[in-house]
Length: 165
Ligand SMILES: [Zn+2]
Ligand SMILES: [Zn+2]
Image (cartoon, rainbow, N blue to C red; front, side, top):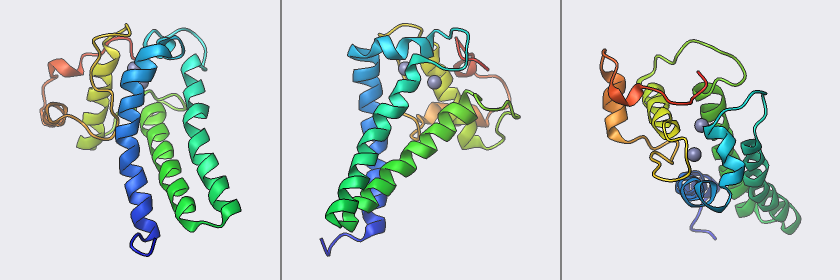
């Protein structure tokens, strides 16, 4: 494993997770586990959602990778664990705090990338059902939302559906 430095493994895992998260969201959460994801699209009262179970589900592989790396004394696995965990932390911060404002209701972000991120996720939440969704990813924002985020007028893609902010 001399060819791969720790930071390279971390970066690879971080980037790979965006694609893995897209696949999971598109085919699992909007597929056979829709029953757990439904209440994230159809907000009910209360702080917690069934959808929060995915937090544990997605944390498990990172935790197991870290434990395996620790016990087998394989630093490569520890770097992989760091990449997976970093992605999970960034995802949680962006999705639950910046977009859905679950912990505090701050001002809307002034940063164009963060505004584009919110527009794209709002577009995802316009679809209340399991099928015909869009924008299943998180960090990679389709260009049209980035463009809309830079314009002064309210673009069509910013009109929200059942999002709770
Ligand atoms: Zn969804
Ligand atoms: Zn959401």
